[in-house]
Length: 299
Image (cartoon, rainbow, N blue to C red; front, side, top):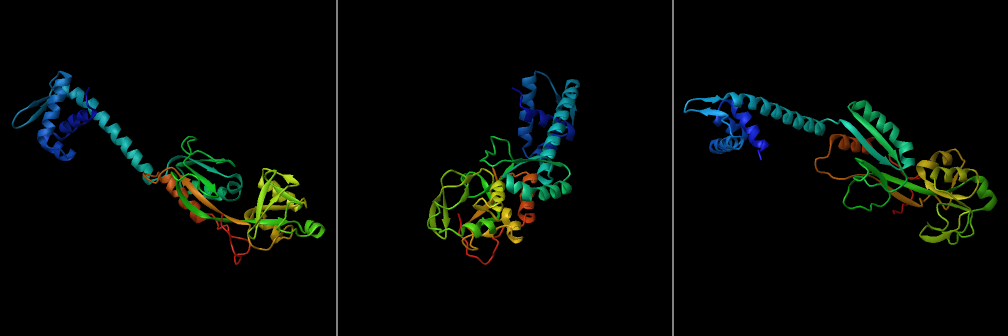
């Protein structure tokens, strides 16, 4: 089988007009150059070059062959330059996955600024409240909230988000604040039929009066006076500030959840991924607890 590398070597020899200069350019010896071209001619069954002690002449067949080999060399060079440019300048489609709430609240301005700065990039934003498989789903990176469960991925921490227990003033006026040691009888809004809440280190199972699968619905239900909900600060902050919700069990967050940008590999990371992660880290505001002086428990 003809080696493409030998075809490119032949093109270099003709272009340089010298075995010595071509060998120097490619970082090989003159002897190796001569032997490889001799083998190429044997495989083709034709004479490509006429060699004398003073000059090198390309045969008629060699001229036609050189044109083809030279065209291939140019295509390879263009391909290499294109790939290298993508590493230096972000281009092409960037596929990003994010939890729905995080994407709605934070990613739109980040994506807008990123596209404005790098016009050769297109972004596909996939909002999904489920575990995603980056490679299988063809994703470049994902926003992950909570403990990391795949050590094979590269993760860059973006910040932390507090989660609080909240209820409406009307609900608390009517029902009071329940005993955190026994929440089973309390009117709670949960995400499963039976789940455990941790209040100040005391764990208690709840039996929700309302079970939902959406954080925003849980928050709105709490505002409506259905019961106590456990929701992120980014979701309930405005309602607490304007008095529609109050913190339950004190200002201490129920938990802190870490936010990470995760991607398959740090090796040869495309510029579009690297720069978008940088944008996330610098443009997304910190998701601190509602009361920064409160003690915090990590999960």
